[in-house]
Length: 353
DNA sequence: AAACCGGGGGA
DNA sequence: TCCCCAGGTTT
Image 1 (tube, chains in turn red, purple, blue):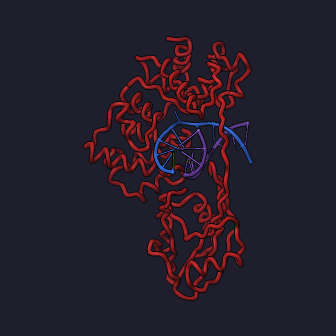
Image 2 (cartoon, protein in one colour):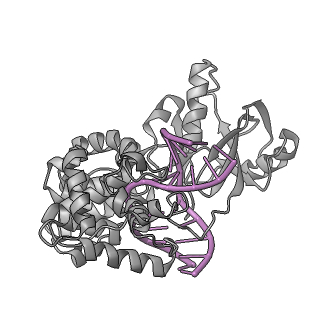
Image 3 (cartoon, rainbow, N blue to C red):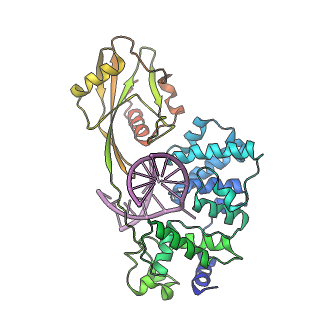
């Protein structure tokens, strides 16, 4: 084994993390954990893993779940297409593959929501197959230890780091190596690295050349755009309220929201008025307007303001709008910005509904 | 290749 | 505020 692999596994023998999905060889539970861990910190995914693995102990339980039940358990974890792909793949495994999880790298890679990282993780952790994982930790560790300045978000960089990771993967211990390099990246070789206590200091090019703060190199920058949502809380004398399921190819797919008017800036009530009248085809009154809420997404800033309105006549509402008792709101999954608003409402005991 | 998809935590 | 996180899919 190379000095790098040897030192890494020695470090890991002392510092490895104990996590619930490391106590199983069940490919279903490993798959479930890996999907939740995509672009998500271990500490954040942990309670979600406990809840989902308890609610759906086998792939068939997950396959037979309702979309709303699954989304409610996923609510707050983000990247909701992961839950959609998870559900579709569970049905595929349970009913097309007769409950048998695929057991080769190429077969695993075919699953929806599974890319090169996740396929390598499942292949190595569940079946001990020799495929190196390449995630954010691996990019960081390899770029620093070997002083590689190829941008990690370029095609060339992905190829180079994948080749390097597989080169150092010991054929007899692929699972240990994969776990070790990710634990090392998460604990020792963090974005702000802990070089003073690092047992790989002597072989690290970035440390020698004082480049630990500049590596790894990324070439693309995120451009943030702003969106403005005006949410309408439309109640009637029966204390019913309209909600709508987001189905478009857009953010928050499969979550619910109140009827929404989106514009290119935040409107005053006077400016918003004609939009509402046109939408509902009736004359309305705006009873109450919330403070503006904002939510930061990775590439969006979402502004939302909530208007409680009453209608002078029965509004014309699209068929897909659901008319539900206000007390049932907690049964539906909502994006963070709406659950925050609802929490504020109940805390202030302002019964808008 | 570039754009898009969330939410939380650290600095 | 900005960056990063056990990335993947779509265009």
